[in-house]
Length: 432
Image (cartoon, rainbow, N blue to C red):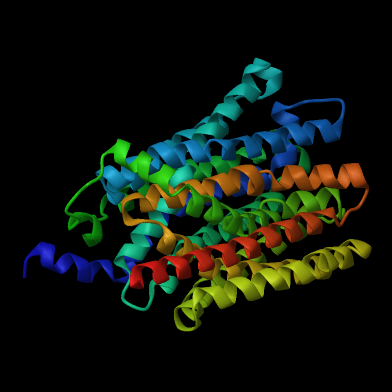
């Protein structure tokens, strides 16, 4: 049997899925450690006499990386749709590693002045540019190698793999806080997770290089030019916009229960660093379980029922749950609320990501998927820590992040109804 003939069989193995999603680890790991240590980064690069202003500058820089995601989605997404899935995934890994290394090694404000925050911003923008297509590239790859009737299960491993990064970052944080004094963590300890991420890069690069191109891309008779891809994206702007709204629910809930949890727990709930990181680790583990499980459920019962049920559940429970938490903050309450929100997120996202891959036209599947996801993340999810902090500061309501999540759920519900109504209309037109 030829190597070409045997390629599809090998791609359907767990080993192939692992190789595909490995780069997702670095993407999410980078974003998590920045969110976890936002307060220490604020004191290092954004010194201010006002603690709130310093933290907001740090969180705004965290969010600024997401503003580059749409640009990365358009440029790198078109590159992948034209040159292939494998080449694009290797390129995004290289760019992401460069951004991580920059943040890890930049001296503080006290050493080089205003150049310090500018270089950190540059690192975040580079990370955001590469991340703009990482998720879309991986999701499309998994969708194209999935066995019949298991597409939801396969694609869900894209999001599930990111939870390994959440768990690992949380565990590393617990170890650091247990071995270093608070002053050491503020001074240099927060850099250790970034340096660890850099050390993992060569291993991830070797894994990515071993990937084969998907059969769906290899057998495509016409490879669209960059101009054709951009024109098709304009022609399909409606489905991209609806997909963007559907992603809002995912991206807001994810960054709220992961990247924002340590900051919220410490600055608002006044809980200990270790408690907050342990909860975040538990959330990562919970997400890891629910995502592939509910992706598989969506293969059996359909995507729409899960999307509708869990957006409505979030609408009804997000704010009451957060209000209950802030009324009497404790480790136990934080854990229960976060695990509930994790269940809602994992159940919705398990069906959402594969839906987004399915509704995009094949010629622009990576670019269209990535643009929809990146726009939602740039405008809503990435700024969730900053928006939540601002809402609490302006309203005096410590449960205000629950309102932000409620808004995101409303966007997801409306988008779901629009997308499936559009698909029915398109089906009816084709049948006619």
